[in-house]
Image 1 (cartoon, rainbow, N blue to C red):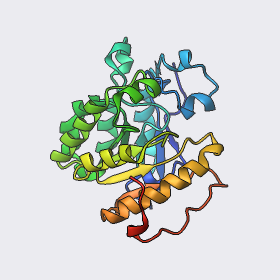
Image 2: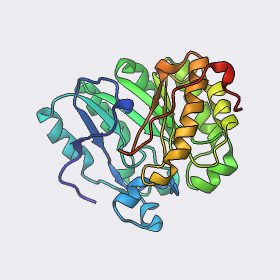
Image 3: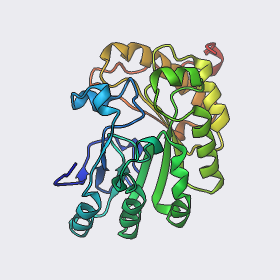
Length: 268
């Protein structure tokens, strides 16, 4: 696939970005994603079938475009990727165009950009040395919607196992790389104990937490509001409110009720 542009201004919520006062860019050097998540919003936006979307097509001229665009683009924060995953499974890397993530990172970081990576793949550790070199200008996020790999197989059939993602975040944290964990989307049926499990396991490893609802199903907002009330109490009791960001995808999203005193919160 050939594109005319690669580095584009984005209106993605500020939760993902490191420098609020800088321009925010999205960069997607694939069309599609082999993780094949049932809840994927990008596939719906582009009106592609799951079969089409699960066979990612690399942007073959990505490096050439970036070389042209960087000199004329104001440095800011770049999200890799906003509509796919920068670290596609090895099983789909059938051409040289699938090995562009590292040179893209090198070009952006050498040019003074900040980079936020949001992935579901422990393959991100392949670039650990680069993150260590530029740790002041990177943040690595891992999406983990459940601690249960059986649930993962249902909702994210092509994505790596949950334990491998947890281990990756722990390794990044050990190397002093800024990290974040995204529990997004919070699926209906998610139990409070599942979130508590993730928080307890990654309490010392995640510098930031992002939580959000299915962003194309407004009928789930009431569920999310109830879950948000509980989670605000949980994060507050752990002294973590400065590390958590609750996304609000819908304009009609109901504001959470005022939190009760911690002793009144009984849900576990």
